[in-house]
Amino acid sequence: MAVRLIPAIPRLPLVPDPLRRVQISADLGAVTTIGAEEDPLAAGMEPEAVRRIWGTVRSVYRSGVHPAVALCLRREGRVVIDRAIGHARGNGPHDGPHCERVPATPETPFGIFSASKAITATIVHLLDERELIHVGDPVCEYIPEFARHGKEVITIAHVLAHRAGIPNVPPALLDLESIGADELLLEAICDARLTSRPGKALAYHAISGGFILGEIVRRVTGRTIREVLAGEILDPLGFRWGNYGVRPEDVSRVALNYATGAPLLPPLSGLLERALGAPADQITAMSNDPRLLAAIVPAGNVVTTAGELSRFFELLRLGGELDGVRVLEPRTIRRALIEQSYREIDLTLGFPTRYALGFMLGARRLSLYGPDTELAFGHLGFTNVIGWADPERAVSGALLTSGKPIVYPELLQLWSLMRRIGIEAPRVPHGSGQVRD
Image (cartoon, rainbow, N blue to C red):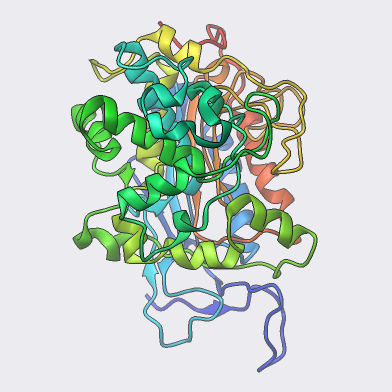
């Protein structure tokens, strides 16, 4: 069936779109794919509630800054939404009319950027549970050369909680020519200098912390963090995706990321560049590079589908056991979720964020996960990627997007989507707010 395309916003011919939007199909059903969904009534939700949630997703897509949007929502362990809308490739702001448009489906893998941090943290807590490490130990007990320049007091917990005092990214960590050179990356991390006393300030560590944690995993197990993740979690649970990067033959299957929305101006552009280590558009372009997709970037290059990311958080919501396979003990997850920052301004991001040991926590008022979600946990990814679990609502979910806008008029629609999910999936009577034993 031919898909008739209309502009996302009115525009004059040959005039560049200042908001860098994509073309939106007149028939959204023609660019929507539905996966294996279950009866929402069996999960304690009304079918109309699912329709309202998906209607909000369609509004997010109509903003024109996301070539593809995928959402998977589990409630009481049942998949009530597993859908994708848009194109995985070929419908970027600057893609011509003759560019092949590849539909996005629930099987399309996306790069999840910083949502990778929750997966990396899970591996670290697993090794703590097995007594191979202790998160309270100094990093230099495992990486002696890390102790340079006053870093000997930095603990693993400091790194997980974004309090290590080295949030800035050494240039070598963002050099695609050296992204696979482990010794060079290790030297850059060990030679990093403190910007604040370890433990004192909350400042988001966008990239640096992941490499530290990945090296600790390698030293105590003798395996890369990619091998540990596959062997201890992904393979036993039958995951197809969900690891750092992809195999060379899978690169063409990954949804392309696109720089969309209004180009940033100072001071916001400077703030974001300081947080990410490079301009936002450069980060977006790098994320599509096969070299990055082949590398191990523990803080930012996990590739997965919405269904599998939702399933990962379902594992955590259920206390570390899924489909009869136990990966973690419930107490390990509860310890990982202990709050490490309370009503503090993140000095990197510039706004208050509740962190646990590797996870972003919800809040009663201003929350990533919707209204009154103080006990929800998960992680945000650049820019509108979210993976989370909400034990009080018996929900685990994943929202993946391929557009990378920072500023656009419809930004509040993302907040509206998470709010809609919280409203349509209210607390369950047996929801304790704790991961299930």
